[in-house]
Image (spheres, each protein chain N blue to C red):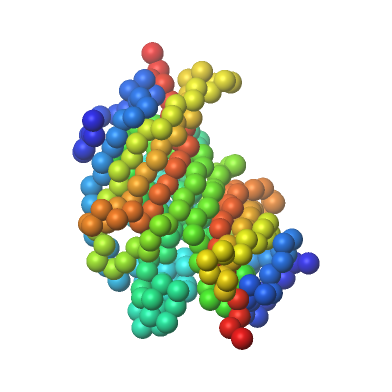
Length: 153
Length: 153
C-alpha cells in the first residue's frame, strides 16, 4: 500500500507497521556532488573527477552525507508527519557509491512502533528507508528512529 | 594521547585501538542552519526562527544532517588517513539539538580494528566521534566503520 505524494498530515494514530511511502525523484549531477563535498567532505574522490579515477572509488562519487541529505529532502516531502520528521538517531550503510547521473528516490517502510513509557502522547517509530537509483540499485540503507506524536484530542 | 592538527598521512599500520583525534572548531550561526535546511531538510524548526518556537525544538535547531556534515568536514581535517576517510556505514544519535551560536568540534576514538578476511591489505576500523559544543555538551554521537588500507611495501 504505497502512498505517493500524500499531502495528508499524519499523526501517530495514522501509522501502522508495514506501511510504505515512496518519494519523488532527485536527479544528481557532478556539479551538485562537487559543491556539497567542497563544503562538507573535501576529498579528491568527491571533488575532482580526474583525481577520483585513481582512488578507491575509481571515479567521482557523492559524499555519503550528500546521499543522506538528499534522502532527507525526499523523506520530508514523502512522509507528511504533522509535527515534522524528527529523528532521534539511526543506522546507515552505503552498499554502492552514488554517481553523477544517478536519479535518487526513497522507499520507506515502517518497521516498528514503540509507545513512550513516560510520555503517552508520543512513540518511537522505526523506519527503513532505501535510497535507490534509476536502475533500482540500493545506494543507501537507512534505519531511523523517529519521534511521532498522537493527535491532540 | 590526542593528536591535534596532525598532518601525517596515516595508514592502517599507524592506527591502534584507543588513539584519539581532536578536530578544529566550526562556529555555527542561524544563517548556515537555515541555508542547509532550505536545501535538504525544509522543516519550520530548521528554517524559521519564529515558527520554530512553537515546535518540538522550542526554537531554531540545525538539521541533524547538518551537524553530521560539519562533523565530516572536521573529521576529514583531523584524521589524516592516506587514502581518505571512507565510511562503509555507521550509527548516529543526537542527544540534544545543535543551536545557533554553537561552536562545534569533534573528538574521535578508535574502538576496534578488524582485518578483512578476503583482502589482507585493508581493515574495517570502528571509530566513535562525539560532536561537542563550546559547553562540552554532546550534540551528536556517531560510530562509524571506516575502510582503511595498509601502506604498500
